[in-house]
Image (cartoon, rainbow, N blue to C red; front, side):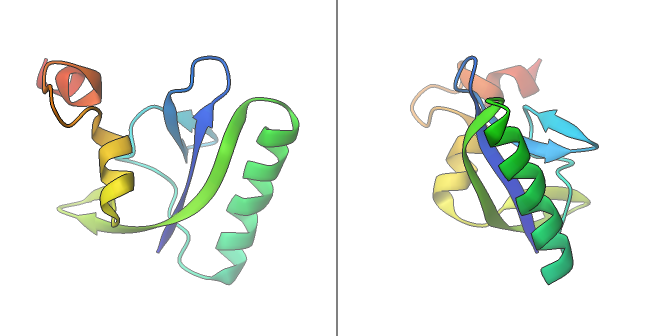
Length: 97
């Protein structure tokens, strides 16, 4: 499975394509299960890049764990969670509230 990720151009925040827009959390990112779905997400990313909405657009490997979408690679897990040295900052701090 794959999901579409990028960085929002206005503030650099890591975002994932979900429900027709860019979400700041990966939890409900749109999943691509086949080549046609991969192509659809890539086209969405290319259009958003051309419109200067996002940069560094990539399809990445993902899995569903307990009903929640999660990146597979460590780099992407860090982008999804936030800084690794301070749990009171970044996206992991927002989830604790």
